[in-house]
Length: 407
Image (tube, rainbow, N blue to C red; front, side, top):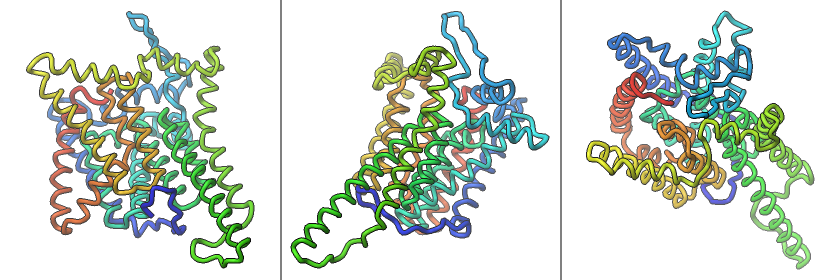
């Protein structure tokens, strides 16, 4: 199950009862975060609900959900912030829920995020349960819940929705449900640009699976020609059907992202690269991490900001160490590919640097080494550690959202 090749797990439905401890723990952590946010915001004369539903990206999503695409802001320096930078699945769901219920677009976005965060927690549990077992799965969900920027999981943002789709697509890959994996990857590609990471995971797993099956077939033919018996391994699959499903899943995976990017190119009249022009208007791009490195280096030019620079260096170092640890622990290849692409796109993009913590949130497999370590503790000690970190996360989330917050 933890081999670097694509694992072929025995299909097993992730029963709600099996995931219940993880989901209950997750709900408790999120309820604590919302309660602390409500109290902190009230003390400052602010509305916690407004902070969750009517600031930053959430406003852009509700504008798309209402009148549709076409809104832009021209800044004095000439930059153009266009709503075409925001992928459509979340506003589509907001519009659908608004049409079916009395909820406003903002209310619908908040509802979608709450439900999607639970689906994401369940998906993270399902993936981890397949790879490492139930206890580690519960710990992985709790660690994702208590991330310092975990409050974003309850905002009308697309991170929770994307993480849910990504996690369940990865689960489908790990359990051999190729068409489901491709369909979920396509939906993830309609949610955020980082949907590329899910596509990469599905395609890598599919290619490795095709190569492995071809090699196995060649060995079997060689054994038959030599008169040897076929010993061990898995039984030959039905001709055509598994490969057809795998191919269909791989074909579906990039459809969502490709369709939206091509549509933006057509709408802007700039062709297939039109979406990159839209992102350039937001000063978003991929520079290999040069801008982020300069941002971190600038922190060391004065003493007051030097501790922040040290914290950034340690944070990036921790992420890379956890990723390398996942490789050493032989995480399944789809998880490694997915996590690697998410980390690369988040750390090497020249986007708003304050956004990077929330952009890293979908990279949940990076938490698996910590989840394994937490699972080895006695239950009472694990609960104590998780509770302490949950309190710290709730306080930080309330402080952060009432301050600079997630741009």
